[in-house]
Length: 465
Ligand code: PLP
Image (tube, rainbow, N blue to C red; front, side, top):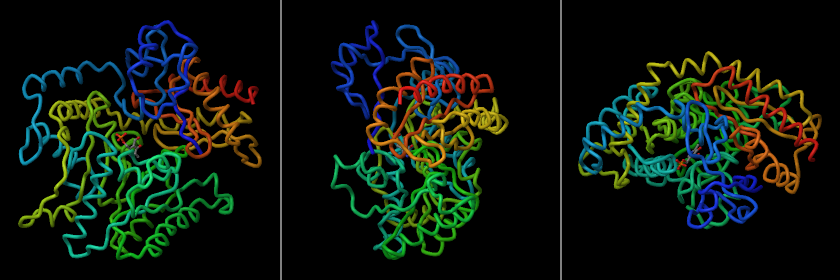
């Protein structure tokens, strides 16, 4: 299993593509793939669901940047909200002080969040939110007299961020091995990849109960007195979109209650409309103790993240001299908070969540047309969040070897899709998948465009193989 970096594009004459190779250290990028013959793609502009590169070529943004740009590109009112706030108060920290936008945003998020998740700790992104959640869980149990509870359980192939704590929770060995040893106490259990669980036949619900029970087994194996939290995404992204089987989260909730383990819903991708609701937990009807979120909160017009905790978790931190000794200079930055508020106004005004609910069946049906191709094994997801798993043999579900995957994803697919006008992601952190998460403003015309481009390129990929 390898981490799929962005693929190089054909030689281009843009001024930035070449300069990008000199001083810019790109993220999750195999730099050797760029050089004279292949330059870094440089995106210079966006409008609605489309982006343009420095050669003026247009692409459909099939991934909302990186699961971020919910409201679409080019929203002047978000830029203006940022400018207004920077003029009024560009910066102040939340370290024993507050500023109006953080207060307003915390109120608004508490109102949107399920149940009694009323306490919002701002960060600058998703990994920091995950990191914060683990630290809160550890200290919470120390404060209530269960100091041994510090371990965490998460799922195989799941991605939760790159800081040492969040990376320890991440279940992708290839993302971790260069940085070992990581934080001790992070254990992995089964995910909800039904496509790769043939022993469960067609019984999705039974599979869900089995997968949830694996969490109970992991807690038992580690010792319930030592386990603080379980980190799960509502729909697991890495591996190619694993939605929860019916009843899965209800069973997980029971298990967490039984062992007094906190249920953390990592919604860095799934919050803010990706699944047609403010939070993914609402879609699947479960109550987490903590939600972590980021990305879509501002539609990417400024960075911010948050850890949202229930009243029960906050309670001991309100007593006496107790303090959560944790923070980030830029956490809850006034400009980002102002942009988030303006972004949530757009959500309300344009009913973006409802747009997802109204159109998701069309998105699914359009992508499912691709199942007639021999290379498409599975189409799965919910809302505006889908993975298309590619296979060598549809009948046996045989996947590609490491070499084939390298040739298919890195050598061909990412580049070919981009050249055909679709920005999305070909990924082999689990089995090879194409991931799609378009802006929430998209409609059937965008889905058709995505399907047409994928169809052509996947047919070609089959020939290449
Ligand atoms: N958690 C999940 C589920 C994510 O998908 C991501 C990023 O994609 C993160 C955490 C890390 O977020 P960030 O890159 O903002 O640190």
